[in-house]
Image (tube, rainbow, N blue to C red; front, top):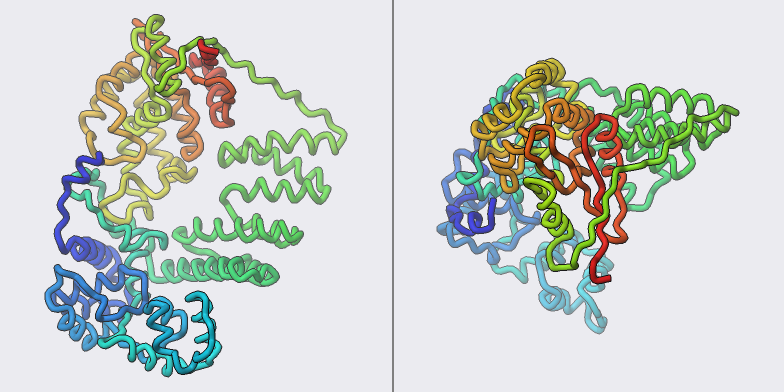
Length: 557
């Protein structure tokens, strides 16, 4: 959304309650059947509260806490905060502090306030910082109840915390489909301005099909939390025990796969660094996510298991998971073959079609300067980078992107499924994508893609950047680029969406007739081709797609 549009949005004073109720209603509708009696009771209790009490509770659970001073709760849109707080305390949705630790005191009070409260106990001690003061308070070995009494001497009103934070965290997980996002992100200030495609939200397609699936996900999340705690606390020796627990876990539900595989990879990599190769290899074997097979191959190579390493490389090259894995196997295999006394196949050197451009230096980006200099050779030259090809892909496969697939759409405000850039994207939609590719063969690209533009504009889709593509650009590109060339690009995007959505050439030059076009990567002096750019240029050469590298020299040098 443009900044002007953002500035024009006038949020309701109670926008956060509106957003929370959207979250609340979505979870109730999709997951009400798997909530526990306690979880449902908390939701029912919230619904029974007054408007102001609901607003205050949402404010509290959205802020960094957990403890808050009543005297610091200033929300003009909420009537009498004291009355709302009384209601929440009576309902058990908020609790009053009966015990506090020194860290909570540090979060609640200023250094000056704490020095005043503990002046008698710390008499004669010179404290130079708040952190040191908190350590001095901790060293007093006061009970948590005693610390709370000290706090009450500083706060004339109450010190409170929202209760049932675990239930709110669960609601957020069920709504967002992950634990990263929360109420602080869920402002949705552009609701009503951003158009969301009306994909179906069916209960049978939800992420967690059962309570058992949810509990398994939470168990994996708890193991991941333990892993990060070991890293933060500097206790790497405990990773081996955790690794055995992770390796023994039997994952039965697809909703846990991604989290479990990521944990296996991260834990295995740390064990690998510690020299725990067998345990690391066991974890990599449990993972179906890159770089598990690559790292396992490197362990085999490091341990001198050349034949097994070669077999692993060959397995990767036969069915690679992604570009990075394929590239790694191509680099490892020749080394392993030499160790086995074999002669590796020679690697061909890149020889890309190049041109030289002598340009005057100016304030504009070098790509725009190059585009201007090429206008005399072509009918049109557009500065497109990754945006155009990605957008054409999104328009061509829009229905497949938004088709109902289990576990990828969690709420009505997504710009695509959660597996949009994963290799599973094609696997889970194989039949539909196959049919789409068949329909695209021989189709009129310009008619098809402009019709898609008209049909879907301006709905949010992470593949299509409406800010930088126009109907005219889509039509011009589709008239000039043959459909077989577009299909070749689409196939490579489908193979590794995350990696291959980057690295496209900067410019699209269009001629006067169909088939007359060129993709041009612009490089200023000293700039080199990136790996993803090289991969695309190699692929273009293999597919007969016209592409060049424009090397720029400054005319003033």
